[in-house]
Length: 249
Image 1 (cartoon, rainbow, N blue to C red):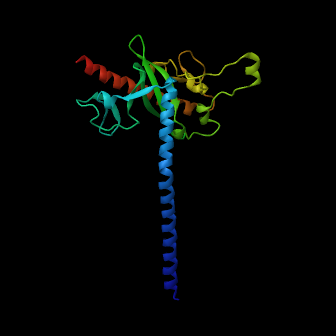
Image 2 (image 1 turned 180 degrees about the vertical axis):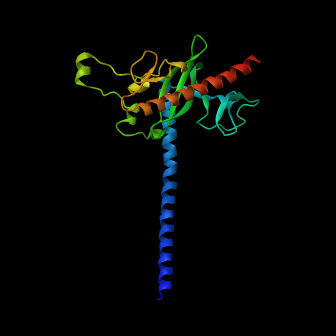
Image 3 (image 1 turned 180 degrees about the horizontal axis):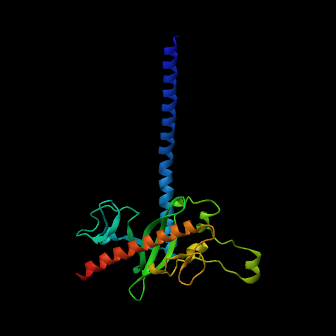
């Protein structure tokens, strides 16, 4: 066989190997994609319930029930919310959807998903908030989606680290870890957000009353999650303002 023939043969074999590898990757992706999406959907559903900690809490989409939909700018960035003439006339992604939370027939708050840049990943946080007596908003609870948290192990991942239980110190002195309303243990960092207003979502390295103390060695991740919480609370404020303005017209 001539040198040219050998080169052509090697090239053909290489093309076949590359094609087989690409096909294998495609098949693996198609098989695992549905499982990944299902697990993410299950985590979002569990997270929504955990934010409010109320057994049987039900959620209603403001876009479907009230026609409150997101408004995007020229660069497709979210600029706010408006109420459309017809409820449910446009599809809204989970990222920008705002939900009303009900305990039976009682409205207990609203929920939205916020996003913020951590050290290595774009963090997604479910944020629940309720109206305060002065007309503002206070955080009911938060839930960091594990699928979005790809921070540095042992450092950034500490933002989702739960307090250790059953320690000698806790048994001797009766120390208690933070609990969600439903009784489940929550990460210490998350517990700082409960009861905070938008103005109080400021990260500090040292403990300050009414602010969020960063985790030592994970300041960027702490800021990223706090930014995500601010983003989620902002969505709730804007969506509910659009709903209120329409009701007053």
